[in-house]
Image 1: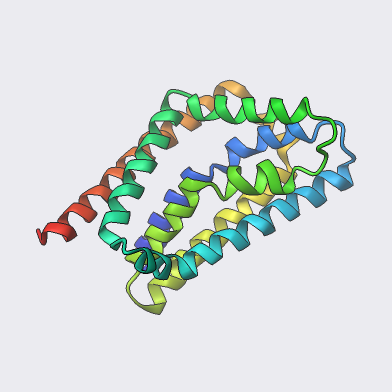
Image 2 (image 1 turned 180 degrees about the horizontal axis):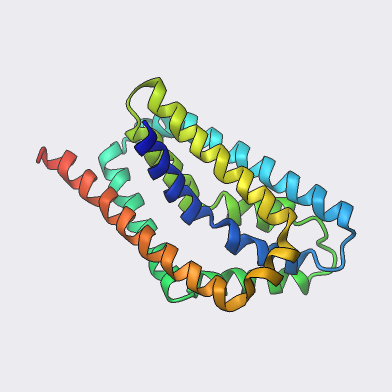
Length: 207
């Protein structure tokens, strides 16, 4: 149970990437009142939590309705996570996030960033949605499912803390340290993604 919790936590932490979301949030809320920054951070995490919980609870039923097997989804999800890992190692993911944030800053009529881009796609994006569905599908019984949800809640709490402390966190970490951490997490995610693919292939062919 503890092993599953740690594995789920590591996977979700790497995919959602709270330290990576913090500088983006600090940039797109620059100039906003501290009260508004806190409110948007809380709202973004709450909306993202609702999205991820819905897919965690009904994702498997949705796949069955569409005629997609869990093994096929494991393979597809693993490939998707591997691509994200490659982007993290070569810093492409952060560049894309920064480009999105810059476009948002150039649109003055958009003030509330809690729904877009923070809640979705930065926190509850395709990668995190696929990940939570994969983890729940692998859980065996209520105990393991609870462990996965516990890991998700912990990562979301850490994400909220990172957003609330975005300014001071950036001053402490700096861009160079953040880049090193991102690359290390990318390598870890690549290994986890390959494991998802291996599990899917084994189950599909009964190996």
